[in-house]
Each structure stands twice: as C-alpha cells, then as structure tokens.
Amino acid sequence: QLQVVESGGGLVQAGGSLRLSCAAAGNIFSINTMGWYRRAPGKQRELVATLNSGGTTKYADSVKGRFTISGDNAKNTMALQMNSLRPEDTAVYYCNAEATTGFGVLRAWGQGTQVTVSS
Image (cartoon, rainbow, N blue to C red; front, top):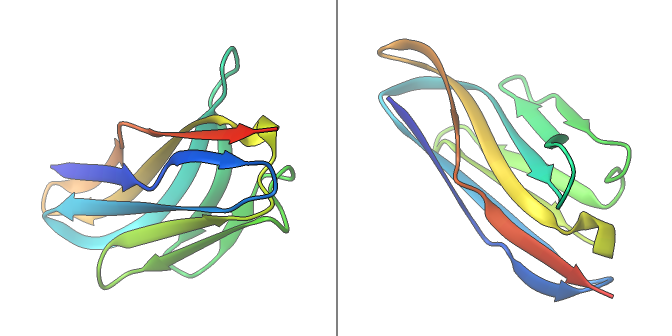
C-alpha cells in the first residue's frame, strides 16, 4: 500500500510564509508524481502544484511566483514553500502521490492540513 502524510499547515497573516511537507511511505520503488491540491470552503478541490520524477513542475496560475514545489526522490518527500500568502489561499491542502510499488502503480491522498491566512 501507499500512505501519504502532510504536515506544516497553520495560521499566518497575509504576506507571510508557510512551508508544507509531505512524505510518502510504503513498498515504493519510485515516485512518479507528487502534488499539492487544495479545497477552499464552498469550492471544489483544485490543483496547486505538481512535480514529476523528471523534475517538471506545474503550478496553478494563482500561485505562480509565490509558491515553490520541491522534492527529494531518495526520501520520497516533497515540500511546498508558500510565500506572499493571501487570504484567498486559505484552504485545506492535500498531498497526492503516485508511485510504482510492489503492488503496481498506486495513488494516495493525505488527510489534509489546514492553511488559514488572515487579512
């Protein structure tokens, strides 16, 4: 199986920074893709940023230039550095991982971590 755990959420004032971390665990041969998604109150879950095994990143337009995704393939971990946070960034942030494991290609979601940005 594949498990994903996030950490690092919290409360911050507008303009501040937070760093989210995500760790994948299981019988992992390799991580294919890891990404961050978020769900704001009353809205659907949306993509924030993704990082694939080749190092290619993808960002939502709303976070470009403010958020940076990075990963450590050897440790099966990923981080999201969030700078210049805005109240509209308030959401539950979820880590998603797709990995090649002893059970084949699996995907898993973390339980989410709350990010609240006050104005």
